[in-house]
Figure: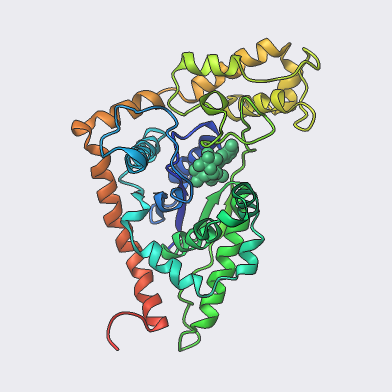
Length: 360
Ligand code: AQP
């Protein structure tokens, strides 16, 4: 049967970009997928530790679980899992789990590393961008091999479909290539049997990248050094959403609205956001014609976002409180159980094909 896998890093409170580029798409998949399709969504904490954790929104009251980097990561993990449920993913229908609870991800990563091409890895745009920032002597292996872990995430569950943003399509291509390399290195007999690893199909998010509210030429990001002003978290209050959008950077070119992401990134970003939530599904170009001036654009965009995210904040707060704040941990434990079963099925075949583990 078919299986969907995708992940989000617990590197801070998910924002509008994560929502429109990923989470909303996941909910749509859940609502439309055939009943027998497995839906697996992971909070990828092993990926998150490729960057030092940032304490993005102060010591929250959910900070239980120790201080320092570990405490921050634990808090982000709980928050991310609660957000997944708050935006509409069902913990019963889906497998929701913390990646590090399923060691098979790391095990398969090592096995794939033995096939993965370093030449291909060094051409990954994300590696080039992130490693350039770190400077040559400090570049770390985990950042370089990030796509190998991502390939393992997908392949270990035998995913047939992987919804991602455009920036991730290169990594998915790498995952397919690496699966093929593994299957060629470890052919099965009889040769007619299906290969051990299944090559997944990419489902590209239909949405444009959402840009930062303060620097609309870079994407909205949990790690934006400009901080909370640059993004709208999915659990922002209506007042906060209105205030953030009111202070979003636009331009002085003209008070008239026009859609041109190249020359008017700030205004165009607001039009893209508006379009993403518009009930009448008007294109950014049509919205640009209909809206009078920047003040109105900001006002109407804010109202569309407030409506689009209505209920998420309340549901999130409720989930965090349930069972004396233990509910999220219970969901994670149950998710991990399901995910381990799903991964073990693949790992049994992988180990057998390679000659690892078990009887000699
Ligand atoms: N600005 C964005 N617009 C549209 N989609 C976005 N995504 C991220 N930012 C935008 C999509 O969200 C999913 C989960 O992302 P992630 O947390 O795994 O990693 P990321 O892409 O690196 O997200 P951030 O917010 O920028 O986090 P940090 O700062 O930690 O790197 C992905 O499908 C991604 O495409």
